[in-house]
Length: 116
Image (cartoon, rainbow, N blue to C red; front, side, top):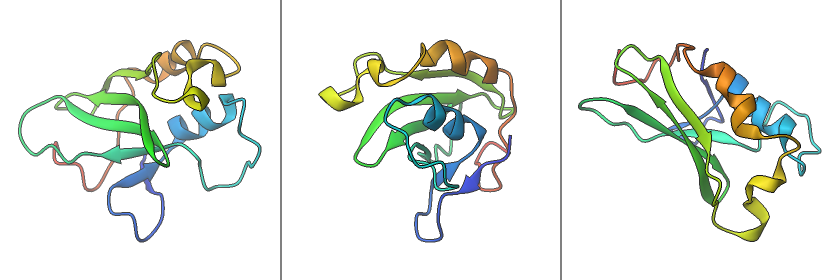
């Protein structure tokens, strides 16, 4: 799964099929443009594994995606106790964590990834 830079000025922010899926499952998502509301933030861990991407919306982290040393997704989740009343797990049409399980085992392709 290829990560695509969210925009030209945000160094470590990416969108991909996962962020599009989260957007489409959101009860608040009304704009189906290529600019995803949810995005991944690469923390740039340079040593060891796992490598963590924060799943974010502007202003806060709502979950995490963890990859192993082979860039394979080993875990992905939206936190059930997201901070803020507008970001609770109920913001999604279905159990978002069940929906995201299909991506476990996928390989992340990121040209800037420190694990490659």
